[in-house]
Each structure stands twice: as structure tokens, then as C-alpha cells.
Length: 311
Image (cartoon, rainbow, N blue to C red; front, side, top):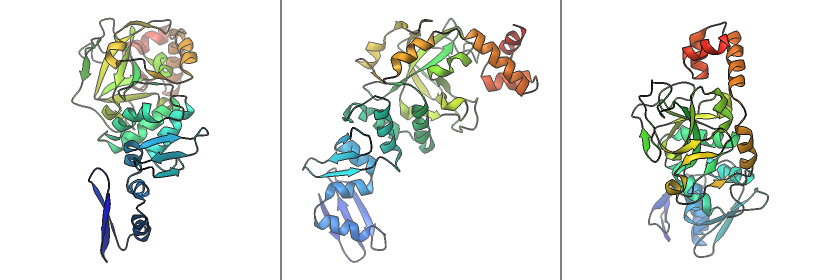
């Protein structure tokens, strides 16, 4: 690593050969010059791109979650508070949820995939989904979510035209990245807390790469989302256990679970029919008996709305 400086700018080249340039009128110019003279490369790398500095170097988080330490190959280190940056806040969040202890390495694939998402807003939205939901992360950097489908594993929204096969990917070309459109194009998925809002016959488990997430709508406490591609890995039994799955084959090893996962599994198996009927009746009152509106809000068919209110 080295730097080149003249009166107009300073350019610093880090270990991967990529460089960063600060003009002389930049507020951090003199600070970078001083760090370069002291060969404090890790600090410069972090100043230029904190996410890259964390992912490219050995990183850890304190027991209290209020400090992230980055150590370079040469032994240089820097400690910062995990605020002001989505990646840093995500690391602190994963620690609070019990996904990691001090070692950040197990979740680096997930963090890298998240940052590869071409939709910048979706990256922040993924954080909001994880912040409010219990979830599982796979060793290859994906996460597991859920979806209610027909008995033949076809979609409940297009008369089964969208197919799901255990061990195979489902993809769509048309999707909506606007989170304010609560029911729109894309492959829908959800957390377990949202399953009672589905009206299908079978619940499948899908594996999603965070770079394929296109939107996390703002309703239902960020409990559902849309993506453009996912892998169907199994079927969730009514008692909350895996009924049919090739999860081990799909992920290579066991998933990384949050501490709250065991408790959440026990709560999943509660009857969803009663909750669904009550929710439909409440929405009919809210939307003044507008069946079409209720169907869109609840992401179910008009026929299901009518059937629920008859019950």
C-alpha cells in the first residue's frame, strides 16, 4: 500500500490495488495526508469505505455490541461505533438477535450478498425486515423465509401458474421495487409472524439471497417482502417442523439461527383460520365492506374474503 500526493490531491492505493483520491478542498484531505504519512492504511480504508474495510479484514464486535474492531493483515486496527452505516448497524443487530457472538466471519457472506443488491433502497429495507423479524441465515449468505401456496405448490395468486418444486429455483422477470405498493409484482415471501395472513393450503420454506430482494413493503411491520428469485427448500408442517425438505443439500450445513427461533417455532402451529376470519371482518369494517380493497390489502382472493365473512 502506498500513496501519491501533490498540491491538488492525494491518492491512496490499498492492498487490492484499488485507489481512493481526496482533493485538496475535501474536508478530510489533511486527515488523510497525516494518516498516509503514518502509514495508517486501515484507517484510510475505513474512512473511504467502511463496509469494504470490515469485509476485507478480520473484524469483531464487542460483547456489548457498541464497538466494532477491524484488524488488517499487518496488525493495524481501528475500533468504531456501529452507527451511521447500514452494514455496521446490521452487524450489531445480528449480535443482538443471537446470530453471532464476537466473531463476524460467519455472517460475512450474508453481508456481502446484501451489499451486492443493485437496488440501494432494498439494502436498507432488508435491515428493517431483519430488525423486526426472527430469521435464519445460511452459511452461503442467504436467509430463509416462508410462503403459502396451493396443494400442488403453485402460487395462490395466479391460479397456480407460478410453480414451486423442492430443490429448484423460481424466478420472475417483472417485479416492483416500490415498497409503498404493498401488493404488487414479484415473488412474495414473509416471516412466520405473517403466515396467518395467507390463505393457501401449504406453507413452503424458501431460501433467498439478499441481493435478489427487491422490496420490503411498509405494512405488517415489515413482515413480508418481494424478490425476483428464490429456492424452494421444503414444506413446513402444521406443528412448525420441517415436513419435507432438502435443506441440508441446499445449504451445505445447518443454518445459523437466532436465539428466539425455538420459541417462535412453538408458536407457529397455532390455528390460523380463526385469526384469518377475524382479520377479514375487521378489514371489512375498516374499508367499509369494499371486498376488492380488503382482498388487495390482505393479499388474498375475493372469493376467500367472501368465504371468511360468511363464516
